[in-house]
Image 1 (cartoon, rainbow, N blue to C red):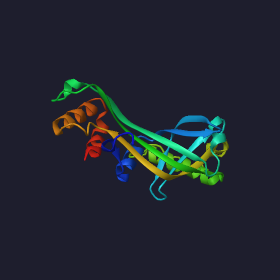
Image 2: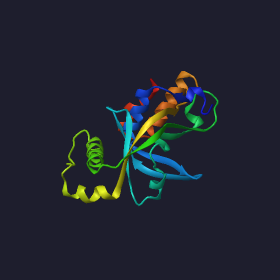
Image 3: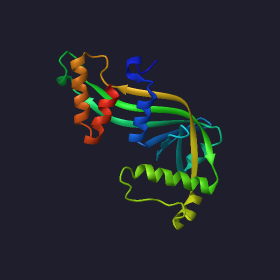
Image 4: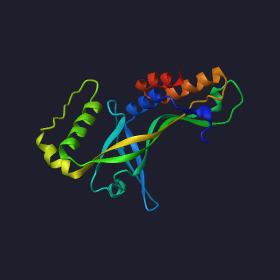
Length: 198
């Protein structure tokens, strides 16, 4: 199995934390053997346990989003080149990363009011914690915009956490690699990186 077991996590709470921290995801689907990939924000719904998103109807990938179709969604967290110079032991260069892969099935949201609700919920999530902007369902622009998107849910069938964090190294080298990753990341990511190392 790849990556090795020590680079994998099945801690759903940690995987959800990554999904929430990095909502710009890669949506991967296929049609007759042709892959389609689009970068879109994808939000985890705590109440339903599903992912929710919307995509421009002009995007050719929409043709692959049939009811019950399979999809893979990739959420990419912080990553960094790890120089052997930071280790206390003899090592080779590597790259550490935090990635979540989700597999699931598509269910379309064709009702315009329900589609608007997904847009309101997504905006509310993305404007947190201060919410300087509040999108209202009765915003006149929504009436026109909703006709240009395809909203959908993804029922999760498989979770994969791929956390390559030098887990195969000794404790000091793991700590040094963690600090290297934190140094290459923004300050708000430090807490998440610490949490994923627990």
